[in-house]
Image (cartoon, rainbow, N blue to C red; front, top):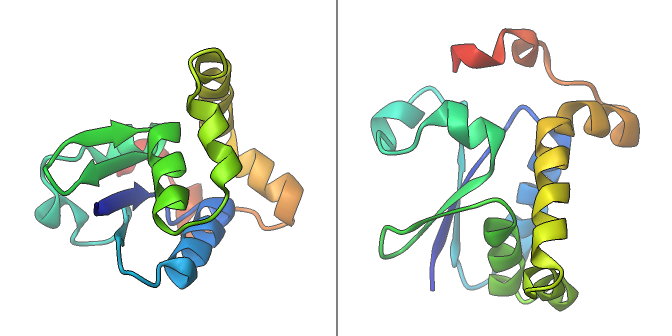
Length: 131
């Protein structure tokens, strides 16, 4: 199985997670694409970067789009780490985990700044709707 992840390269936590996944991806199952890359719209016209900025998007090898924690859990599964994360996909846990993810996604820049001490980069301070 292969997975392309469309991530927010302006978010220090998101970028750190992608860097870690990249290092752990010994079998080359992941392709990581920054939604803010200059050629993103040309390479991936079927991915709305504004929506992908709101909720993490992924694409399976068959073209199916997955979102949110589905992407995160699958990515960590593909690199063989954090098997405990699959608990987040259990039917009883899933709705709570998904709601928590949406909260995190909405406030990730503030959370990232608080946790890492790294505010968004200067280019990130522009209106995020200008993607």
